[in-house]
Length: 343
Image 1: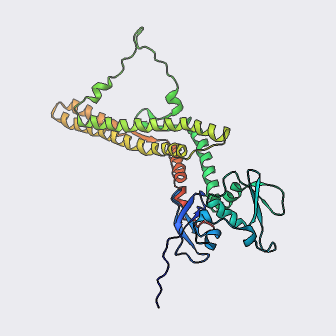
Image 2: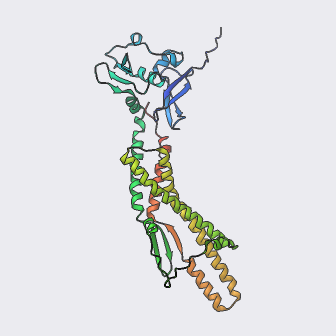
Image 3: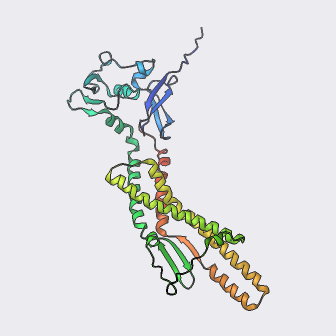
């Protein structure tokens, strides 16, 4: 006589070994002491799922599987026994696996204390469970913390070091730091009582010339890159105050802070390439058009084009260093997927 195997779903909950988030899954196909790799829906890291002790002993829902200390009490010579206390009410003894199952099922709250049966000192249960669930991720967490502090120090130094450099024939290489950018400059009049005339940006933007529009587009990209790095320096101060004064960090702040450092050398290089390329193309085009005019005008335009052709703009070396470290720090969560958690 054939019997149909029981395929009734048996949902259990076990903790993620990275973030301690509760993962609910169907354990009806699990063998005794079987573990499987799965992706945590909370932190998106690969973790090990298993059937908690209380759930493996009783197929009923976890909410109704409170272990009976008197019925399941093992020999004290074989395993450590513990008591837990909530609101001055002491319960136990339990094995630590039983305490973990009660914690995972939500029947023990975060304010629970526990102690070894041979000790009278109570400790927070959340600390003990948290330490065990994060033991495999600890080296990467320490590396991440070290890199964030390194980026903080480099950002403070980079504010005073060249963030960008412009190479111009005759004048040579001009390096500009963000400190120079914010340092007020004297606006001396060219003639007594008269200030220098500033260019009208609207006239440049409204130009019908395609190359000028392309140069303007490149300049806008450079301006966005500069705005982003300015915000990065401001968030550097915020991050330092939160981390060193209040001992707090926020993942969204870290991501935005690192992304702003990452974008500058990339966007600035692209924008500078577009802008200078358009200006060079315009100069070469003018040199070709002036060939039909007088030889003197054509020669002057050609010299001007050759002069412009030697101009270059690029991010400072310190900004590339900052970008590489920020990229590595942002990639650490993906690197963590390559490490198998300790079961």
